[in-house]
Image (cartoon, rainbow, N blue to C red; front, side):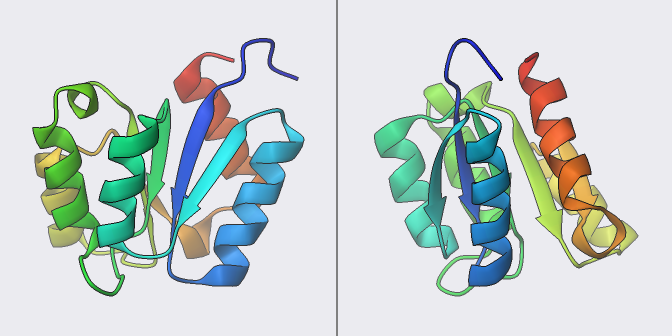
Length: 126
């Protein structure tokens, strides 16, 4: 369990996956907020200023890369860790995400839920 509660924003339009990740992170002691599209992600992130963001790419209203660019444009968002979490295992998308400011790129189909939680803990130093 973590001693100082860190806030993680989980953004994914796939409800089951979003809920599974949120539940796993909550169980580990994180304060978890969620958003189901890129537009909502930017609004929620600006409101709560999370300690870390897990961000899907393929979403309605605004894709994850556009949301990441908006988040990085705000003062608080320049240093906030953002982990892209997507099904796109494509070098072009990986390069685009990293160029936009992603700290890490996770291919959802290649990773276990527990590994995602561990990566979040490692990134936040807890």
